[in-house]
Length: 381
Ligand SMILES: Cc1cc2nc3c(=O)[nH]c(=O)nc-3n(C[C@H](O)[C@H](O)[C@H](O)COP(=O)(O)OP(=O)(O)OC[C@H]3O[C@@H](n4cnc5c(N)ncnc54)[C@H](O)[C@@H]3O)c2cc1C
Image (cartoon, rainbow, N blue to C red):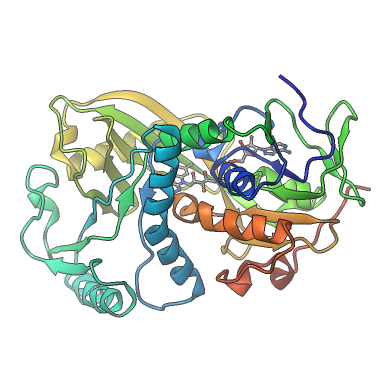
């Protein structure tokens, strides 16, 4: 594989969903792009199989919730363009979501969510509180002690099909190079990127989209100042009988059940702040599969075809980090999507590439800016 240009217009560090969208947007804007990935494309947190695109609760409205709504509403168009360009499906469908209500007090809260959706969501996207099971056979009736929340905005996408399509689109451009098995170990005061063999790359601008790896690149001595990883485990199951692939997402107490275009059903996820190994699965995943099966009778007897774990990038302060990095020479940060990256990565990319090309993108919450959060590029002594 060619090492790519030594002085690209834009170097993107990290080939997960954020880095791939950044490369796609930059390539479409005509920049010469070098995408540099430590392992292989989409081998980090973006290599999973869940793909839930679920809105935040529509109360306590703020700039982050608005951005995520913008992301959810604009993603289908962006995906359709990508599918047309590559002739590959990304497995997107607006399936809606069902969330059982387990307590009368929660039902009152649900009514507030329904009101919030009516106020903030556009026409055609609704949140209703229902008594009858909207998906008998898919969701157990036993879950419905106090009714069920039903939203029609939630969607799912196949993370692996989406990242494959983004890669395929990048490979059609002469001005894009992808370099795998290449780790950036240091960002110099002049913006030069160092690889382990002391090779350097001197990009016009660098976008750090390295997921949890971004934290140590930005602050080698104290990565926790920038963010930390939260491990998640999920599984892919093959049901004994075909299920409707556009069945609504089921979500109850942290457990998701998602029917995919492939005919498989993804279930997840654990949320682990402490862990020894980032990519192993254990009995915590068995617990998730058991809860998912209790929620979704279609999973009874289903074969587990894959168990998977990854580490989500959670920025300090919880909001994603997108924007110029003070202390860096033309360095832009784009990470920290945590549990909603797949809904907003294309908008993170629009903003990051906009900054990289000298613009002042709007629409991004101020709090996403590293400067607003006191995040600066620090170098190892
Ligand atoms: C079990 C589980 C379920 C999830 N479910 C959902 C979901 O349903 N919906 C949703 O939106 N999100 C979900 N997420 C979260 C989502 O997967 C992540 O937020 C997202 O993948 C992060 O993308 P990223 O591009 O920022 O990071 P990554 O995908 O981790 O990509 C970063 C890349 O950078 C590379 N890298 C790191 N350091 C360097 C370096 N120094 N040099 C070069 N390359 C480097 C890594 O190898 C990696 O490939 C889930 C996560 C998990 C673990």
